[in-house]
Structures are given as structure tokens and as C-alpha cells.
Length: 281
Image (cartoon, rainbow, N blue to C red; front, side):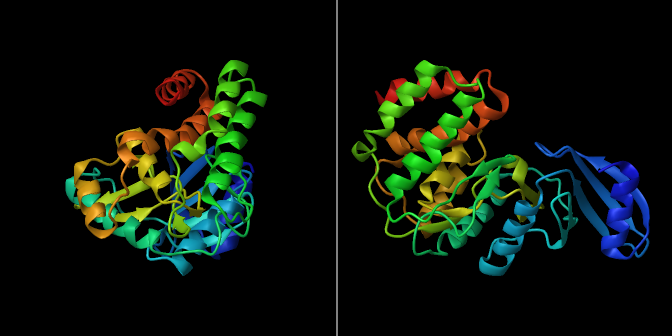
């Protein structure tokens, strides 16, 4: 969508005239803008292909969970409009404790089976969510082996590393027990997707939702230093962690987001995958 077409699309979807716009950082999305309309309303516009799943996921979280997310104004494959959320403060200890409360409440939203009624995306990559009765099977087939295969097919994951992941996938019963029930997760809760203001979380953005063992969400929160002691202290008060999470399962579950990063960026992320495989061998 060109600049003129994007402007026309935004004005058509809102029935208002744009008076100001500025570029925002957008991660894997090509064009993200802060748009001010002639009635004073401020929106965030994402422009590019494949945006419909993100709008769907935000609307699902707003309708079916207590997690704060931006309100979706317009959702199409090439244009997503959301209310702008005033934020920009750091994820400090107070905000971490608030994030723990919000994610614990989200994880209390249960499902019947692992997966989701439709496929979603993570970092712009397709994320398959077939309905699955057992978590170990879902994680093995539709997270670990799926993303390893995608990364290998793209030439980002060496064949030797892919075969080590295949071997690990056959031994998951050593480390993974079945959780009590599937929990709804955000799926991509790292620092850049958590908007904070004055020691509180204003909104979570860029979800990658499905029903999972919530430990996979908690593990990802440690991968890039998003969550620390303040988060886990408060989360543990609300939903105690099962033994073995920090010792083994955190590394095991972090193979999935690392493989996502291998597929997207390659480079040093392969080394991190191999280091975890060595620790688990």
C-alpha cells in the first residue's frame, strides 16, 4: 500500500481527515505510524500485508480475557488501526509486579484443548494451532519441530542442529509433565510488547495467542531479560510454579522463541539453540 493509498485507507476507515502523522518503530512490521485525526483522536496505523491475524488476536484478548490491549478500530489484511496507548516508561519492578498480576489472570482463562480454533502468527511467521489433547504432543509437533523445520528449510538452521532437535523431541517425556489444563497465553510477552506508564502496564501489544502450558510464556519472559525477581515473586504468589521450571523446562521452552529468531534473523541465535541442546543432552 503506497503512502497515498494508506492515507486514503485510514481516512476512509475512520471517516476523518489526517492532520498529522509520524513514523513509529514496528519490529517485523514494515510501516507503523502514529496518526492524529481532525477530531483529535490519536491512532496507531500498521500498514503492510498479513495484518488481519494481529487485529483478530487483539480483539479476542479484549473480548475473552482481562489483559489490557489497544482497542482495534479497523482490521484488514493490509491495514490495522488501533487506539494509541500513552506509554513510554520502563518496565520497572512495580510494572513487572503489575504484569505478573495481569498475566496470571490471563493464564487463568482456560481452554478445552491445546492450540486454538485458528492459526495465528508470531513475528509475522505462521503459527499452527491444531486442536491437540496433550501439551507434550502439541509442543513437540507444532512448536519445536515445526519451527525447526521452517528455519532449516529457509537455510537458517544447520542440518546437524535440526537433527539434534529431532532427537530431543523424542525425549520430551523426561522433562514435560501435563499441566492441569490449557491456559490462554499472550505468546510474545517481551519488553518491546509491554507498554508501561508510571509503574503500571498500560497495554500488551503484538500477541501470538493460543492455549498452552503457561510456563512457555514465563520462560520467554526470561530469555531477553524482560521479567526478573519482582515479576516471579508476584506471579508465584498467584500461581505457584511447578518444581523444575527454572532448572530445566525454562531452557527447553525457550527453544521455540529462539527458533523463531533463527528463522527471522539467523546469526548468533543458532549458537544459543545449540547451547541449550548441549545442556539437555
